[in-house]
Length: 188
Image (cartoon, rainbow, N blue to C red; front, side, top):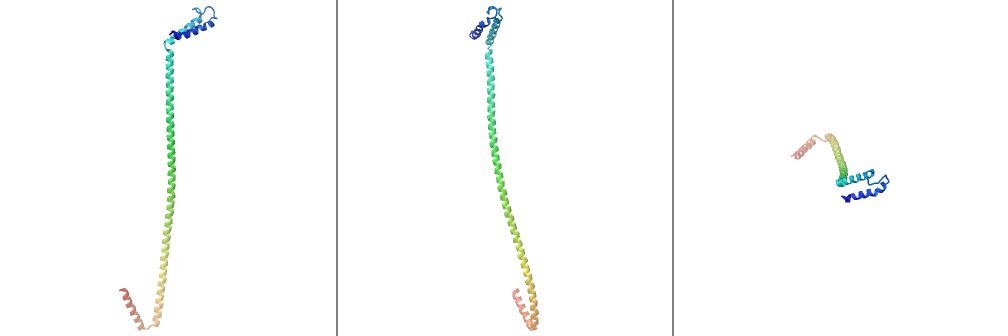
């Protein structure tokens, strides 16, 4: 304890000559400066005896340790936040790439569907054109048949008039009999 008190005592003694400028001798109880110095030394000794500097040091150490642990925790939280941010940025990039792939795929499908619709429309037009051409051909054949039938009817009528005028009854009967025989052979 004296080792701890000795620096304070030496400081007080060294300050003594400067304080001696006051009235009377310094080392007497009548000198108020001496009394203050003794009180101060006793107060410092009491603080050292009660280990107040060590307690203060311990408290400051605990506080420093608490601050250090808070800083470490803050650093860990910051690193975790950075890793989460990087993870979310990676996920956002992946989602963006996936969205771009989906859009590209949708465009390809739309182009394919448009091409298929164009082909289907061309096929439908071709079928309708073929059906229309068939109807036209059928109408043409029907018209040709009707004209032919009308021509045959007119020709038969004209031929029968000419034959009736030029043929006699016996020749007409022979032609009728031949036509009947020919019809029988064709029908059986």
